[in-house]
Length: 290
Image (cartoon, rainbow, N blue to C red):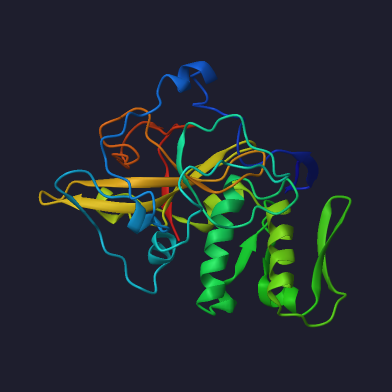
């Protein structure tokens, strides 16, 4: 469970994701009937998103700039093909038929790195790798902003009744281990509500890119991220989607059980009244970008 600081109230509730929610309309047995019979080739022996997932016929991968967040995601190492989604305690989740890949990144040993946190984790890891330390800062759901620079210099967050305060109580520590401790703190107090406010709306399909998010802010809410983009000669584009989920579990690439011929690729539209993904229905459609 995760803590939420909202306005002047502090409650312990789930802030990110609902339980398996194709979640909001289909039962577990019904989703199993949607397992894709996939005609799209997958290079099972390859270890990054871009290498493993070939685009459908007549489509080609859309290139990302080498220093971009999108390139970071497309180049992220994956676990061997067929790897299970594991919860933070190391046990497999019950739904293993709706993903095509698992990111090779730890989940931690607490129920913290859920759906919004998965996006925050990848974004923070990207900025850390790029040494853009000044940009590693995230809001709590309460609106309080807390940066990695503050944390590594010894500042800590304290919740007292209805308020959040920050005090310097530790020495300087810029180690990666301390960075992970900072992220766990962010995971505890951030969520889809704060993440939604930190990103800007994407209003045109032509502007969608790898690293953008599709989000329903709320308690609970949910978020997925674009994990790859391909395009045909006519300019039509298809997209891979990734997510974390509740309880905290492996970050993974979703299959597309609704369009078996192109799974795991999705046809996305920023103007659609709703967007259906393997484990959640986003209504309304709300794409945003960092």
